[in-house]
Image (cartoon, rainbow, N blue to C red):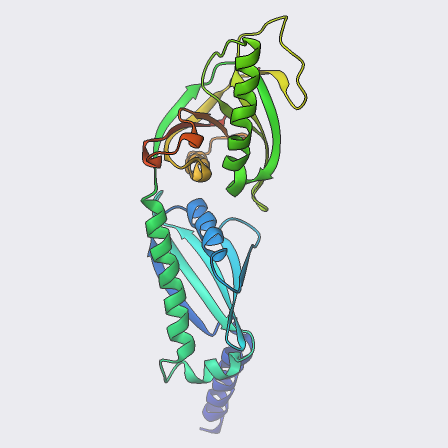
Length: 299
């Protein structure tokens, strides 16, 4: 009898120690989101930037992010874990902790619906509503594999972030158009970007914004303008309709497909644009063809 009581006391003591001292979260919320990992990752970062006192950082990969939100005299820490279910749905497991009042929360949460819990649910609900609204702003259609032909082009080099990629394009549009128009250069297709480096951890990219042109011996030498041969490759392809500021959402669709089918790719997306964003209009009518080159190809 004594031995049994001792074991029970030991088990309860260990459970209490784990709950109050080791358990990482004070509260956990689980919800299904109708989007893939990359889109959720980028939407969360964009939404965080709209909050008054908040910061977010990506942890080891796309599906783990840590967000800190100041609430009154406390800092609430949200650990967002994104678990893919299908190619268009994910489960969000959000572990939430109050940096200052964790012990108090753990004491109250099993017995009361605390303000901390209410605030946590509201925060997660606000993000899901923001994500759902964002999903209506674009459309992605996966097209399969296609060979992307080579072309000669005039380019401007950029180094920026994914979220500001479109601004770089908008700055370069009038510059390249002016050079082409004033020098009689013959255009040979729609403008495109060729990504030369993509840091998925920091959302930074380097890319060439290019116009396909007819190669000529009389091309003018212009500061900040580079002439080069773009080498085409067999690639995964998607059609993106929406504002070009978020065309990178299609990049993640192609990444997911490649991972699911065990296809080796170069994480250097290429985008061809069929609309001029400087002209405005209904963004859902804008079209871009997005390519993700397959790896290990003979050029």
